[in-house]
Length: 569
Image (cartoon, rainbow, N blue to C red; front, side):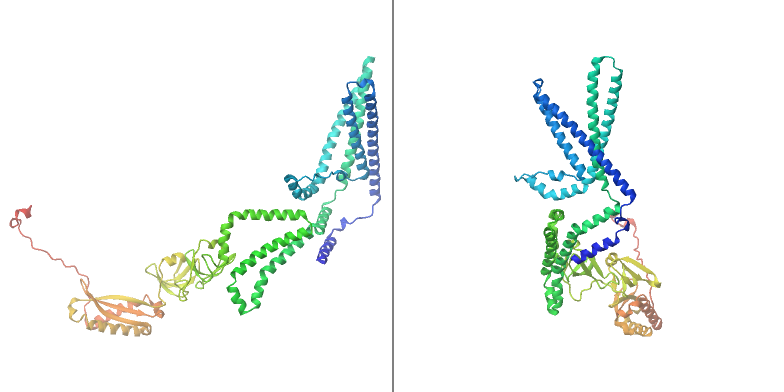
């Protein structure tokens, strides 16, 4: 693992632009360094001058406090002395920081309280994350603060210079000697203030220069970030992810590999091992999560550990509302739910076989030309119900190539069927495209498994004496000869010709013919062949084919006079 990290770091160093490699300082850079040194020396001298001025002012305040004239003003003078002492301490610290070129704020941090407090504990817990964010943004925030202070001091300096200039002009124009002394003291006070502002301005400028001098190019910043990432946090994150993946794959796939290695015995185990698979899935997920957090704990990367723990807690919190649904899905995974493997289930009105149930469930239907496998997420199975299926039970009423009658009188041959639509070829090569659900609702009649036709043929009443025996026999013989002529006799299962009824205009003979499925392609011609044979038999034997007749029987009218009075009324 260390070797892999070294290889990655080496590649980063190789890919680093040559412009970022340090070069020997030139004459221009030496001159610039000399100028910066002179500027630093000038700023340090200003700070020392300011400190000396404050020290003299402090001595005067202390002397005034000990004099009899300080009666009644002791508290005011003591506050001024404390303020001057604090100011001098601050000036000494600024002098030290400018000379050292480093920020000494970290050396002045005090020890935190040991008293237990929930707010303190929460602060300690979130402290590494907040400190990380503060450290990332410390430099731009400090530069922004120094720029604001620099702008404020420059504005104050302009005001002080203008005030001092106005006092000088006023002092030169005064003629009264009594005003010259207070104006002179006021001018001296503003001079000291201007001197202090110059020192403050120099200190702020120097701090800003030091902060901005460390600014690097985008390439250098990116290079340092990548290097730092792979040296510390990136390495921890990579190793934690790698450990989690190893644990997950080990707990998830080792049982499957073991079952596959056991052969036929393993197959029996896998059929009865749904609960083992679910336990393996749960343990692999929990184990990978704990391995990831454990590696971060071993590396003591508290920031990543805190962020990862918060993400895990947030995930668990969002799952609390889905626990009932998760429980139902768990029952499905254990093959104990409303849909079970190997059983028949209807999905969108179409029958399927539940092949396998997992996070993604697979259903099969071999009767379709395409789309034989359907994939659904496990949550879609919660509203479905499955049942056991007999071995001879069909998953779809038709197959590709079947001849069917649909919508009562439509005839066609199935050329394609899928979960979306069924394509049928009709008379003359015409095409029907029907939605699969609508096709099932059309009650298709499949002819390929065998079918029958019933034809009613009528003869005249003058042949009444031979209509029950002789005529049916001769019609049977003539129809059989016609079937043999057109090579249909082998496909005829049964042919019956019987007297049906005495109709209103004719004596009806019923012709009932049953055919094998091989004759389904000639379904439309069969009624015509039977009718043709019957007519030819009539012509041959001189039987009359009647037509529909309507006979009216009229009653004789009687005179109204012969009717009783009541009937006439």
